[in-house]
Each structure stands twice: as structure tokens, then as C-alpha cells.
Length: 525
Image (tube, rainbow, N blue to C red; front, top):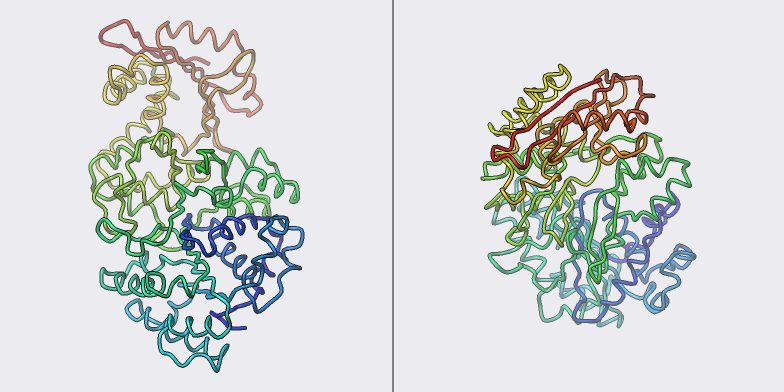
């Protein structure tokens, strides 16, 4: 048993003993690629979505130097018809790329990996490794043992994401990968390969630098969709086991959506956040930014046309259309706001709707992050909108209905197209835009069941925040007096009276038949 060659199953044993959520069904997806033209898979997903757990699971399953039947007994893969055919039947080449960084520079990374892996092969197969390149050594081992390798590469994109990376260091590293997986002996040496990281395969011009890999991204995971994160079924099991609220878990961490086979939309959760919330019993943001490379702030501050406005809309809870096709899959080759936003999808800050080709903030956890982050944005236009939004809230609390109406009029005329203007959903979107800093004080609920109907929009003060609760009724047409009467007659305040905060009734309307489209507001208690 070696460190990089046939590392055994100890890593997965530790995971299973710590309360493993069964994601072994992913193995059957990879089994289907073995010794086929689809043998090279690159599965990218955001940080803390279980990439290393999956890699450890695969090394335990395929490694011929150990017997892992006991570990997989009772798990999903054990019932698959491919289970016995492939379990512990291959040599494994396992590389965690981040593990090499402590002992070498980025510039020397490829040669250092070569040296370390060859030394490990010589310890594991002392009579079979006279050659001085990895691919020749691998070929010799396969020839002598009549057994192919499964390659597992974790954090493959770490050198691409490193803040000190250059075009030269990236090229040298990609050439190293190309030497393994784009050569005449690849199919003779490898039965399959699994690479995982945050970014898809780096593009070199218009072509992939290692184009033989089939990409399964967070935007198009296909058969890996159910294994990209926790499904709702997984989360229900976690909540039941740890006796925590599933509804609360859904409120905080639900919202990511991935497109599987046959265009099936699958809801997924960030496993790290779910597990920490269940263990600690606290629902909050666990989106710790461990290094600057993961900070969205440095990217949303970039000077691209339309980026600031897109961030405003996303922070307000709206969807934004994005063209993802030109993203170069690195952290420096940005040409537009679309490239920046696509990167943040891969980082997990946004979720992508493949049908609409749009993005949105997925859940309350990420909303919390953006609520804090938006105050640090350096775009002049965004800073002005922050002030306007804060004044909008102040005007509501002060009962200055005319100022509220004037602010909405300004935002509506600026943001809406003529075709969209008469839609009540447009009015809802405009209120969100005008009120996009609400997360400093409030939780927003839409279509809240209350009294004998549904509240259009309700802004509920955060715990211990003395701000008044806001009940907002929207009408494209009609009068604000009618809207206030509806709030009272249907007793919309009943569901939030127990909070103990003051409650303000806010009626917002506009006259869709008037060419000037005037907005009106009435505020009552």
C-alpha cells in the first residue's frame, strides 16, 4: 500500500465511521465509463460540496490492495449489477494536488509530482519501476500485473486557482496532465480517470487543453446530478438523525438546482452547511471564506459594464440572464460581466437555470453573505443605490408615503421595458430593487398565508431587531386606499402579531392606464 499508488481504504473508513450520507450510487455512473470512449471524467462542483469525500470513496472502491466489501455493505452501490465486477479490481493512482503545495513552488509542481509518484511506485513495486517518467512506470506496472489503473485526481484545478499562477505555470501543469491523458498509452494504462475540482477544464484559446475529458459541471452535471450535493432526501435523513428542523434547514440551505439527465431539475444543498447546522443546532451562514480566492467581493468589484447592476438585481432577489459559453475556466481571463458571474456560479454563490439561462442567489445562507458584502462594493452606481435603498426604508418607517412613491417611480422608469411595465410582477420586482438592502434588518417572505388570504410581500424583522414589520400589498391599478382596506379586512397582520414589533401596512399601486404611470403609496398602522 502506497501514498499515491494504491492508497487503500483508510480515508473512506474514517468517513463512514463519522456518519456517512450514502452517495455511493455515483460509483455506478463511473463504472459505466470504464474502458469506454467516455473513460475520462472531470466533475467540477463548488467548494465544500463533498469533492474529497467522493474521491476517497472511489479510491476505497477500486483499490486492488485492500478488500472494501465490508465498508460498502448495505450502501447503494452494493445493489448495483456492476458492483462485484469492479470492486477492488484496479490499481489506483490518487493525486490530491493541493497536498503537493506545501513542499514545492507552483513553478516546480509538475516535476515534483513526477518525482514523488515515481518514488512511491518504486516502494510499492520495487522490481517494476526502472523508468523515469510516470506514464512509462504506469505502463510497466500494467504490463507486469495485467491490471489497469483508475486515476483519481482531487483539486485538479488548484494550480489554475492559485493567485500566483501565470500563463507559464498553468501551461506547464496542463502539459503534465496532457502527458498522462492525451498520449498513445492512455487507454492501455487507464481503465478510467476521475478528476474533480471547482473549475471545469481550462480552455486554451477555443479548445480544451485536455479535451479528452468529458466535463460534468455544476451547470451541466448530467448523470452526476444527484451526487453533486445533498438531495432533499439526504437532508431529511440528516435532520431526522440529528433531531433538527427540516423546514428550517430548507429555509436556510435549499435553492441550488442542477439539471440531470432528460432535463430533470434536481434540488441540492451544500453538504458542509447542512452537516454543520445539524451537528451544532444553529442555522446560520457556514460559508467561511478561507482564502481570498474564494471571495466574491474581489470579482464583483471588477470594472465590467453591467456587472454592478446585475449584482444589485441578484442581491434584491431577482434573476439575471447570463451567457456562460465564453468563460475561459480560470480566474483571470475575464472579458465581460458574464464571465465574472459564470465564475461565481462555479464557486457556488449563484445557481444556474439552464432553461432560462439565468442565475440567482440560491438560499438564505448566500443571501446573508451578499447582504454583508454589498456594503463593500466599490462601484459608484451601486454605492448610490445603497444610499437610496436605505433612504427608501427610512421613508417607509417615517410614514413618508410621497417619498416612497417617488423613489419607486424613479426605479420603475429606469428598470422596466414598456412591454413589462403593466405586469404586477414588474411592480414586485421594482419594490425588491428599491428595497435591496433589506437583509440588514429583515427576512423577506412572499405570498405569506395570513388571515383569510395571502400577503403579497412581508418583511419580518430579524431576531432582536426593533424595526417594524412591513406588510406590503401591491396593485397594478386600483387605489392605495383599496389596498389598505384589503390588508385590514383580510387580517393580514394576524400571522406576525406575535413578534411583538410594530406593524406597518404599506399599499403600493400605480395607474397602468395613465401615460405617466404615476405610483401611489399609503402607509398605515
